[in-house]
Amino acid sequence: MPPPNDERRRPGGPRLKVRGLRRRFGATQALDRVDLDVAPGEIVALAGENGAGKSTLVRILSGAIDPDAGAIELDGRPFHPRDPAAARQLGIATIHQELSLAPHLTVAENIVLGAEPVRGPLLDRRAARQLARDAIGRIGHPELPLDAPTGALSAAQRQVVEIARAVGGGCRVLVLDEPTSSLGRRDVERLLALVRSVRSDGTSVIFISHALEELDQVGDRCVVLRDGRVSAEFPLPVASIDRIVEAMVGRDLSGLYPRTRGAVGDVLLSIEGLGGIGLPIDASLELRRGEVVGIAGLMGSGRSELLRTIFGLDPVRCGRIRVAGSAACATPAQRWRHGVGLVSEDRAREGLAVSLSVAENMGLPRLDRYGPPGLHWPPSLDRAARSWIERMDIRSRGPRQTVRELSGGNQQKVAMARLLEC
Image (tube, rainbow, N blue to C red; front, top):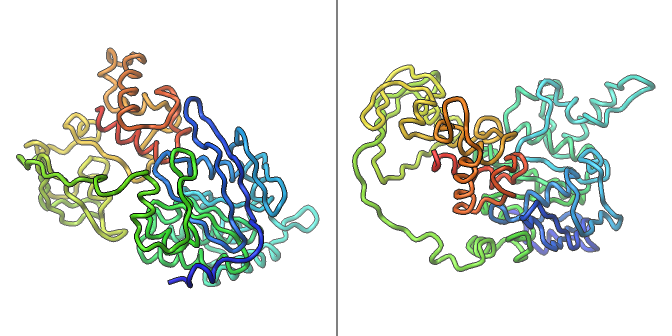
């Protein structure tokens, strides 16, 4: 466990100072007069529900978008970068959930990417290696192979490379947006230890995670956003995670998740001895009408592969899948018609068509419902999408907004709404 909070805070004024930050997207007020201070050597845990404004704040700090109003200061100087590269040069480095490394380059090349040392007109490779070696040494990972292709590393190792790149580039504020979402428990613990070590030289950290116990373990202070505003702020660790959740949702938790028991009916999905290419090896289960079955396991145990095989994305090597009594193997398109849907863990690459609109994503699996074969009628699609936007509180400008422009949490809602619609 980290030392008590009062031992971790450092004296002096804030390194990062945010005042009155506002940002609107159409009818949606994403940020509304947000104030935030982060001291040198402090880790601020940022919490909030989907659509609370966390992603918008991160995008502003990273230089990806400009605020409509408000001011940001970094070490007492105005901070208004023209783009993410300028934000890094000024001292704020952001590590997103989807890492921005070049997989074909080596670890050393990624660490110095964009700030390569030169000798005359040529790259100074010796100096580049030394800079990379110093960076991974500063974060306590000298064992990381400098010449290994980054694409060959594990997810946890790639996170380390991203942090080394930020630290090696001289960042004064490190923003970590859902850094543990693709890591197993052991790798999460290592990453949290690494984050705590980064602040030892005075680096300030903003840490965002939906795993609230991680915020409690790593943060010095918790700032909670709700509906684009700061709703609460308190020191960490807290006696109960419920305090964070109550600040996020704005009400007592006692009636938030009432447990109800539904009637369990006939078997809808039956799997017997299912084997795929690699994983799963021999999986069997039954799912009944009105039932929720949880599938648990460590990273690499075959959870995702099992679901992909059921849905028809991965081939069946052996065994049998029965959906509502039908035992035929099926493609994903056929599974949709059987009433089986899948929300992928890889939302950006295979879960959504982010360049298309909210309405188009919701209707993609069954476009035949919105017009004649080969065509679709946009007004009909928009009407269906508006219903789900309202029912699921999707923060958007409307059905015609592209999914890429939404926050991660609202993108996930679109993926869920597509299942319910189709």
